[in-house]
Length: 396
Ligand SMILES: O=P(O)(O)OC[C@@]1(O)O[C@H](CO)[C@@H](O)[C@@H]1O
Figure 1 (spheres, protein in one colour):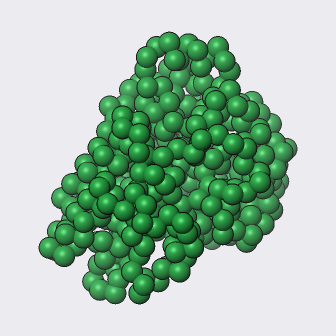
Figure 2 (cartoon, rainbow, N blue to C red):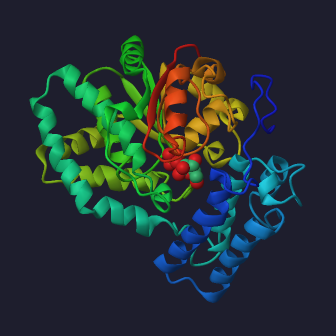
């Protein structure tokens, strides 16, 4: 597998984390130290695990990239992915690559890959489960009852909007962000009409949703999936999740099952019905949960392997959630924001709709007047998580 070398990728500087004061620099120097503190507080790890985590943190800030141990199950894979990068500082390699490797090493440090008693223990489960069990989710489940009184078009609008803004509810992001309330002006590109046109065009076919975060993001994603299936807008939905814990709150199969159960066990009639239908849809094969190693690879979607590419080429439409998936779709580069979304997303094997709140420097498909207005505010609009886009590319 190659690294960002595909001829499809137009040129713009690749983002790195060695520029002091940049967002990417802050992820390694501010966000990760805080994340490590929270992870080590959340479960009673022993001295060896704690020391390994601290060693990783120090290596990622002041050291050079060391490959996984030769005995690691994925040693050969990572050796290939990191060809030419080992021995360099973490900051001078692509940010996307370095951040992904950090999560791979974090799992290693706490014994996730085993052998041993900690094998398979999700270090982020305490955070994800607390969010799913929380009062905010109770409120969101209760609010679903209001959908019953809406017209079909209004309901569709609400569900798309919930799936979009659910991406604000990202635990890794909230480590260093204060959040804020919604405003229509926060939507910087709105291809909602094209989204539904694409769904109608795909009607009766298979739709893929590549999930991002568990909990308060996965919940509206699942309600949207139910809407597509129950309304006959899709005969089949494939929900792609991460094969293992990643970027703190990214959804795994376990998270999907817990969320469906949360819906089924809800006292809200609407939520309960959604949960039951999703369960049944899984029984019947109308909804399948799938994963692939590539979803935890340190590469953009330009470099997806042939098996995943052909799987996605077979769907009528892909809904791509969140910031990291967006970075992987358009390339983690400092594009001029007016760069065409269609051009940067054209390599994707199916028509694709990105539902993303802006939490990193990458952005394309914004008109010049909007960019000028945002730049004029002095706000860190690319990374604050306040703004969002719905962007659709039909070709695929
Ligand atoms: O993909 P998501 O969950 O929307 O966001 C992932 C994220 O929180 O992680 C990265 C920084 O660690 C940024 O790309 C982004 O802010």
